[in-house]
Amino acid sequence: MPTTTSRRKLLISTAAACLGGPLQGLAYGQGQPASAGSAPQARPSQPVRLLVPFAAGGATDITARVLAGPLSQWLGMPVGVENRPGAGGATCMAEVAAAAPDGATLGVATLSTHGVNPAVYKQLPYNALDGFTPITEIVKAPGVLVVHPGLPVRDFAQFVQHLKARPGQLAYASPGNGTIGHMWGELLKSSANVRMTHLPQAGATAALAEVLAGRVPVYFDQVASSLPHIQAGRLRALAVSWNQRLAVLPQVPTYAELSLFSNNDPSWFGLVAPAGMPAAAARRLRDGVAAVLKDPGVLARLGEQGLFASGSLPDEFAAQIRKEVEKMRRVSRFARITLD
Image 1 (cartoon, rainbow, N blue to C red):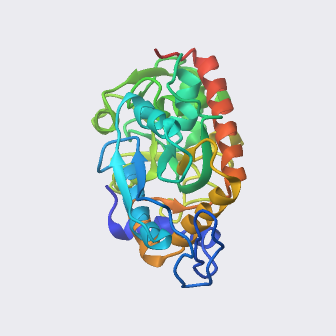
Image 2: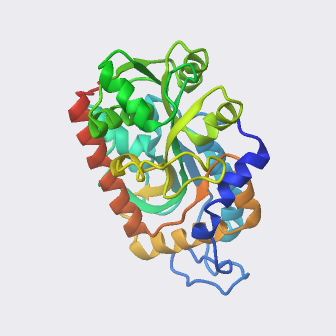
């Protein structure tokens, strides 16, 4: 994993776009926003359960736990994190969708649960578009295209030329079929008009190990995971999915610079509630999360994971989810990815 210093540099490179303004109180339910620094004027009627779709220890789980403590203070009620791994996040999201829309059960949605899964699974026990009340995008996570340094390419243009001269001969690793890494690989094949062979592995750790060993030359990862290997020369970065060049990788262009705009969207984690939560309650909850995300301690802890604070409005987050689902459906149709 990246060092604390490296991760904080990654955060600082775009922090100005994410920060600003004093903390604001959040009233929950029928209350009104409190004045800056004051306690909430209303509280949930019971402790809040924040369900995480993956196992403890990963970036999704860490994000939830970093958020939970300050949000508990904001709401005046405990927020407990509960991990519900299984079925690519479907187990967790089904439980969130089935809960009452009273604010007592919330979930951490991801690009996997609310973008990839609806596009690749024949059946899901939840409706990603209509089964939830989108609250806010919590954080973004830049992606990166990396290759083993033994591959004779120095930049993205040479990489594309190499692929076109050897259609289908090069392989890329992914954490498994229907994962984000798989979808990012197929998206590049589509947008750059190149051919590669997909070699799914048993998880992200195994996929990265295959690339580091040189057994598979190409990988689509989050920057935080690959950064120490890039800095040590064990991997070569060719492009990043972010709105500007990253301070820790200033020589690496964004996909947008390469005119591959559809590839430039990063990964993300967001907050959702069951469908039917009143709009005013959703907005107040979002305002509380946004306020928490301005806390320097929270930002530092997220930055250590290579994550950038967001805090979008509910309507913006709803539109983002719909955009991601449609985009991933186009990728799944192109690559004929269907999972049971």
